[in-house]
Image 1 (cartoon, rainbow, N blue to C red):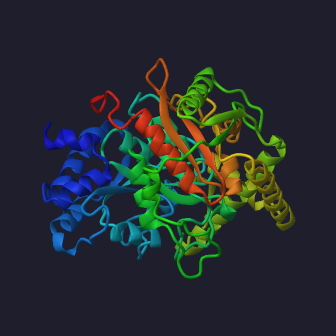
Image 2: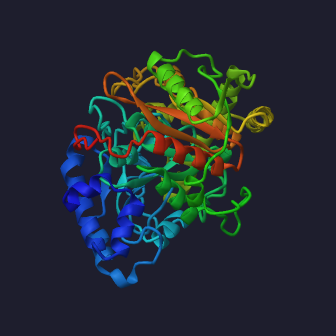
Length: 482
């Protein structure tokens, strides 16, 4: 197997090990990633801002690369929230198409300190507001397993890049499922950490009233763990942070999880239907867990799905309005409907109508839900559900008629019915690629940990990955090495 073929399936730690042993140079890794991006991106539209020359320059300055766990490994950053100095940050919106931040965010600083070399920025829907990556500014990202299907959103460009082998891992963030949704759609591993685990410094204290968190989509479980080790922890002035782990997350991946009590649910709190493929996937995962010695019990917290949805959407709309008004102040622009997509503008207008009392009551309602779920989780180590309510949807499925831009929200709610609850509670949750349907489309399953307990999820994920490896299963577009 040549270097190019080996790198298609090697994870980030594996690539870094080659550099450490001096079997390859960082410039070779970067050039190989660029070649894969140039070959695959015309079909996938995953990378929207190439940073090839800066990446090559960084790779050639070997002596200046920090001696971190991913020294010399190429990486992609989602074009949302995380800022790179002197590189445009559009958030997928024409409103910000000319905005260039002057500094790295704390997350980007830590990524670079880990030795990663940033080779580009990835596609995202406008302000990350929807569960598909089809922005008008850049055009849709395409699913590597079927280019007519959605990658999911909002970290869809990153998921497509990892799934197709452009890079071994890429940045994502998650406010309502935006790491887990594309991980499920594209057949990669996606962990949403505990609220506050990764700092949003220096520009943000909490995002979307605490709904949104930062991390990544990866090919391997150990990459996700090692990356979280490298980027987690508070920065001065953070409003809150979870308890620090007792040992590195990377150590958890190879640790026996013991016999876990797992709560299984097949239906979402909001009561929308679930596609048979998603039910099959979660039932298959439950059987696998039982084969591994865990106890799986069908159970779920008793919640008012309608109340949860109403409170979540109130906070979501208010967050959209605040984000646009904040960017308007930063850039000196005036928001106008012609500068935004219709759905974004309608959410913006709805958010501006949310009064202070309604907003505080919505946040309080989500806190109540968090307590209910936390009490439920006292009886279980992990909860298991489908990640999504249906397989990857056709591109355009979430489009709305011009006269009713919010019409697609019901389809989005049914598609992403299982993920937003965990943004409200702040718990860690992961989508694991254990099942493909008859159309060879990946169908992820979601495992949820107690607040602050990524460790148990990493132990379980490592066990599942060993029992049913997925890293060598690449989409036909990239070349299946399975």
